[in-house]
Image 1 (cartoon, rainbow, N blue to C red):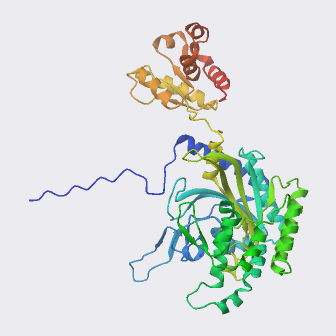
Image 2: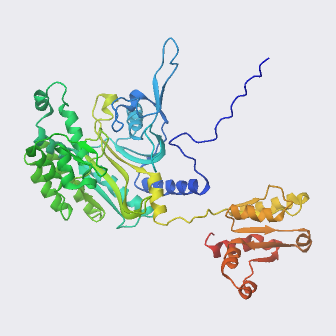
Image 3: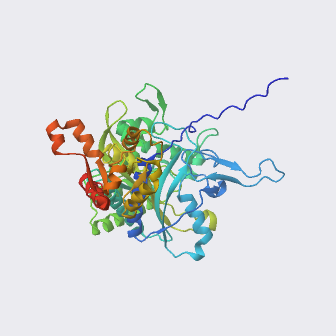
Amino acid sequence: MAKPKKTPRPKAETPKGFRDYFGAEVTRRAEMLRQIAGVYHRYGFDALESSAVETVEALGKFLPDVDRPNEGVFAWQEDAEGEKPGDWLALRYDMTAPLARVYAQHRNDLPTPYRRYTMGPVWRNEKPGPGRFRQFYQCDADTVGTASMAADAEICAMLADTLEEVGIPRGDYIVRVNNRKVLSGVLDRVFGTIDAVAETMIEGNPTGEERKQAVLRTIDKFDKVGESGVRELLGKGRLDASGAYIDGVGLSGEQIEPVIQFLTSKGSDNEETLGNLLATVGTNPTGAAGVLELRQIADLLDAGGYGSDRILIDPSVVRGLGYYTGPVYEAELTFEIKDEKGRPRQFGSVAGGGRYDDLVKRFTGQEVPATGVSIGVDRLLAALEAKGRFSDSAEGPVVVTVMDRDRMADYQAMVAELRNAGIRAEVYLGNPKNFGNQLKYADRRGSPVAIIQGSAEKEAGQVQIKDLILGAQIAAEATLEEWKERPSQYEVARGDLVSTVRRILDDQGRG
């Protein structure tokens, strides 16, 4: 009789494109979320926690570079094998599409305008890469129900304040603002209306809308390839750095010129840029309306003390999602970091957003103006790490060691006193037989202090307190004489346990 096959053990590995987060990483993220939420709350936004799962229909076809809604997302069909298969469901890929559904569903119970913030993970079924994961955190703030440019100006100001709150100083960031209406005005100069372009298309050639999207994607590469590179990509094409040839959009020289004029219209300050943009769009009404909106935003920000050193009108900002209808904005960190090959490069974008007046209309049939921003928390954490804001070691708990198994109640009493005083602490729960292993454990935990009480200390009403941070410094740097003058372990009265630990933590800067 054949032996039954053993069930293979599952592989202990994270799925491709995902990762696990441990102690200090989770703590840092939680602290950043708290700081961001504090700024959003200060601006008058209310918290919202919506479902992580939406119908594919509700999410819509707005994922970047994806034609079908169930591509690029983690989707499944309810009861797919049944007689009547159910809805297609998907994990949310951003926080904006779910907000449109929430507002449409609950609008009669919500104030207008409705100001909400939300934070949590989103999921994208895209090819992972270095620093690019399929699950990541976003912090969004949106205002739904007003067409006022004051809402957009407020979002930009709040974004600047948030970056400073989490530790990005002025001079290390810039919030860049553009307007899709200005872009539309420029593209109308290039193509004419979509209908006019469509009439000239030969079967099999790209539609007018597809060519417009190709131009937008090319404009978005301006920072990387410069004016000459954009000219080539708008025309026949160009060789990239690897030597590969990239096909161009196929515009004529006459069509390319307004796009280049638009991209190079950024002046020395917001006022000069606005003047250049107005000249670029000419008499196009859509473009002129976009420039007027940008002027209103700039004036409001200037009144609030947010100059062009912090928030800048920049024509090169495009933003990838197709639902933006007006102002768009992007927060960029301007300091340099080293890439994996040691080459200097700027850190880049950590947040973006814009106005999306048509998104709620998908559900209600009525236009509902809205604007908002999304901060990439993981990108922002990486930026702070690159700036050296985080220490390499985690701040662990005070460890109460165990010298006698039968006196566990005494040790639990000590740790309870420390915790009640607001001090992070734990009792060693491993095998206490080897005391050296207990100290190794405390070291591995990044513990600042170890508490020791054997039978002799118990009878004398004393405890031994070991300053592990000072001990490590002495071991690494001090001479024998200095070691004697600066003992890192000493006895104190049992009643002074909490106050002594508090003083040591304060001296370490951890109090």
